[in-house]
Each structure stands twice: as C-alpha cells, then as structure tokens.
Length: 152
Ligand SMILES: CC(C)(COP(=O)(O)OP(=O)(O)OC[C@H]1O[C@@H](n2cnc3c(N)ncnc32)[C@H](O)[C@@H]1OP(=O)(O)O)[C@@H](O)C(=O)NCCC(=O)NCCS
Picture: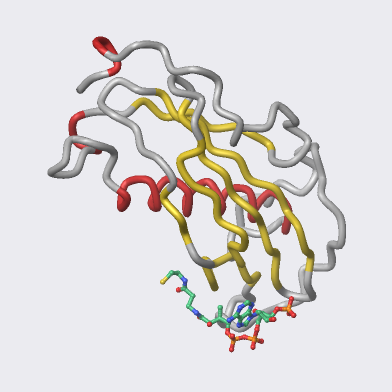
C-alpha cells in the first residue's frame, strides 16, 4: 500500500504535541530503495539515518568532529512507513558525561502521525587524535551553533 491510497489516519495518542521533549529537525521521504521485502520502511535505512542524525547532533553539542557511536539501547519498532510517507526524526541530549553524550531519539510518521520508534539511549563519545576518549568540557545543551568545530 502507498500513502496515496491509504485513508487519513486518526490522531495517535502515542504522539505528544509537546516538542519540548525532543527536537524534530530532520525529515525523510520514504523512497523505493528504503523498503524491505514487506514493502515497508527497512529498519537498516532508518538506523543509518538516526545514527547520522545523532552524529551531527553530538558534533554540534560536543564541539568536535571526533565523536563516535558507543551504544544504542533497545529499539522498539512500534509502527512503520510506506513508500511516499514522510518521517521526522528527533533527538534530545539527556546526559552530558565527562567524555560522553547520551541522547534520546524518536521517529514519527508525519502522514499517519504514529510513533515509528523511540530509543532511550544513544551514547556518543568524544575522542582525541589518538582515538582515546577525551573530556569534552560541556554540561548543558546549546541551541545555537556556537560549538561548531572548525576545519583543521
Ligand atoms: C568509543 C571508545 C573509544 C570508548 O572506549 P572505552 O574503553 O569504552 O572508554 P571508557 O571506558 O573511557 O568510556 C568512555 C565513555 O563511554 C561511556 N561508556 C562506556 N561504555 C558504555 C556503555 N556500555 N554504555 C554507555 N556508556 C558507556 C563511559 O561511561 C564514558 O563516558 P563518560 O566519560 O562520560 O563517563 C571505544 O569503545 C571504541 O572505539 N568503540 C568503537 C566506536 C566506533 O567505531 N563506533 C562506530 C560504530 S562501529
């Protein structure tokens, strides 16, 4: 089924209108190459998008290009998306450690208004030039681009 012949879904109570929880920034359009054999959004595509989104978020928060994925906690694929749907991804920093940043993630379907997945913890670690964890020095979220890493 595509989004063209699907009736409009009722509002889903799983989705909070309170965007204070996570910042929904990136939207994706589900294309044929993003589908699994069932004709719905392939989980691997979604995880690649989330990991990239989290990497950009971590770089902006930690002020470094050298931030790597350390841990992604349990992922519950609650619902899916079909070709032509638009989805949006949201992240929120929930803990600044000494060398790490922990984020929470949500992905929702803009067409059905359903939650697609949530991830309680995505941990990124700031590394030094030798690839060892290094203190990033931050303890709070920035909503500006004041920590953008420069080109070396
Ligand atoms: C990232 C890496 C350098 C961390 O090494 P490490 O030996 O675990 O380092 P540390 O024990 O000093 O921990 C570093 C930070 O990660 C956190 N951490 C380590 N293991 C963790 C886990 N299982 N869950 C959550 N946080 C964890 C630590 O609490 C610490 O954070 P803090 O300084 O804010 O307290 C190493 O695991 C690595 O290179 N992993 C591969 C990363 C990668 O290539 N990712 C891309 C995807 S494959």
